[in-house]
Length: 304
Image 1 (cartoon, helix red, strand yellow):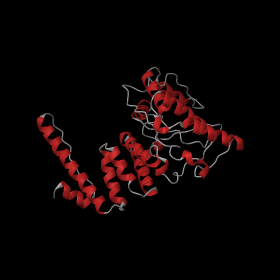
Image 2 (cartoon, one colour):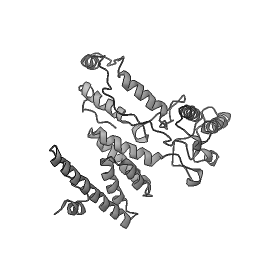
Image 3 (cartoon, rainbow, N blue to C red):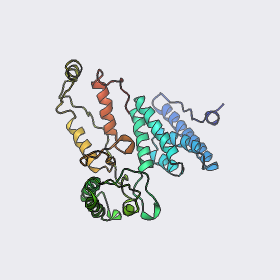
Image 4 (tube, rainbow, N blue to C red):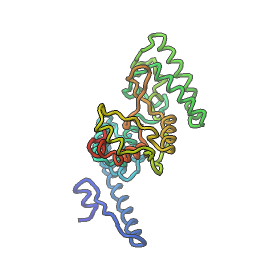
C-alpha cells in the first residue's frame, strides 16, 4: 500500500522523515515535499467534492497548520460556514498541544484560531452582524482609540481605516453620558459603525524569538527554594527578562490589537493566547520558564 493509499484509508498523511545529510538527504527532502503536495491536493479534492463537510476541511487545515501554512489553513476554515464547530475544534487542538508542551504547534493553532474567530478589519458592506463579543465600554473604546493613534504615528494603520480614533472616542463620550460604567452589547445597532473594526486583529506585530529570554541576573535555584520553603511563598524577581526580550515584548503589546477582554473593573483589559496574544517570543518565555524553574513549573502544570 502506498503512502497516498494509506492516507485514503486512515485520513492522515504518513510522511517519513529523512535523516541523512548532503545530496541524498536533499533528494529525500524533495520527494517528501512532492508527496506532501500530493497529500494536500487529495484533501483539497475531498473538500471540493463536499464543501459542506466540516471533517474534510478540518483534516486539510490540520495538515496545513502542522506544516506552517497558516494562511492557507485560515482560508480553508473561513470558507467552512461552520462557525462554532470549527472554533471548538481549533480550541481543542490548541489545548492538546499546550498540555503536551508542544508550544510551537500550540502557537500555530493559536494564530489560526484567533484569525478565524476575530478576523482582520472588515468593510461595512461585508458584515451584517458582529461576532458575539465582549460588551462595549467607554474605557475599552478610549484604549483602542489611543492605540489607533499610536499605530498611525508609526505608519502601521493607513488611510483605509479612516479616522478610527475619533469615531471610537465619540462613542465613548456617548456611553459616558449614560453611565460611567455602562456595558452595552456590541450587537446593538447604535454601534454599527464599530462592527468592521471592534475587536479585530487590525495588526499583530511580528515578534520572533531572541537569543535568550529569561535573564541570568537572578538565581533560579534560590528563587525556587524561597518560593517552596519559605512561607507564604512569595518571591520578587528583578530583571526577570533580558533587555532584548523585554523590549520586544513591550513592542508586541503596544502594537498588537489583541486587547479584547474588558470584563475587569477600573478599565483594565486582558488578552489571551486564543485571541491573538501569542508570538514566538511569548512561547520561548514559557519554554525557558519550564527549564529554569523545574520544581515550581517544569512539566507539573499543563498550560491552558
